[in-house]
Length: 418
Image (cartoon, rainbow, N blue to C red; front, side, top):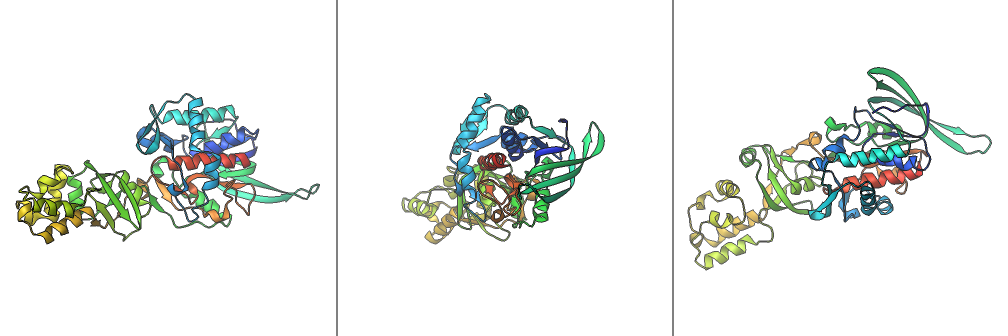
């Protein structure tokens, strides 16, 4: 997408993702002259692939507890000023059909493209210019004091190289406000990069420790071969690490473990940590197995577990955890062994070798430290006119539409101020 580009803009937005487009048309509706610069050849790539192509664009129940940040209070102001209802209202104004799925998640009934088209229509009506295939080379800032008023006017000079109609040309864009919506390191094939962190460091902002989040786990042998044989099979579990607990589906993969439960817990896991998997949540297996024995139950352990878990999973668990009792009726197994097995199945300790990393991660945990950012406007406290929004900040949502809601909310408040 190419729109005419002049040399002077009130607001320049770096990044044409969810937060960038939101901030752009919000500023444009205030009469600001806005340019969005995107390094990729297309806008909104991550929007298009999200939610399996259906875009889980928000969640009905959004709370600060759904976000991970060194400053857990930072996200509250923006989320209260632009709520999930506000975004749903916008979706309805554009007649985008949607549905509410489990855990209060909003999805398009059609394609994710409907959300992107909606954002682009809003940008169009607000007079926002969008320039793709453009690489930023450097950003210069200057504090120009206006003699007549004694006030400071911050300006930014952006220099880059743009591919316009397959012909590269140098660009120099001057603006009063600069919004950094460059995203983060997750899924580089969709435009993820660390450029936003470089800009932050240029302006003396701290960047917190970063790692891949909402990402599948990998395991080394022998568990890797076990999980690989079960690849594609899903079962509901409770997973725990570092005091955080999620109950949802686990999906076995060729590399290890994925599925909503594992993606959620990955935000709170660090290398070397144990994961504890309750394979049959809400069932005290030690108690149940002892009870069955006392009732002279002649079933095999796997026969009972088959009532709760996929048979192929039970067979692998049998080989791993109770091979000695594979053909022994429950009534003939001593209490100590039944209790030990029950406790293991309710709290199976696993140590991943790592995660799949940024290549498949849905988000990047960590980012620009929010201590230097206004929670009300997303403006850098020591650099008026400079804003950071969306995933580049140290605010990471859980799975379920929360990261999109953060993009909408942070983009909105920045767009109101820039």
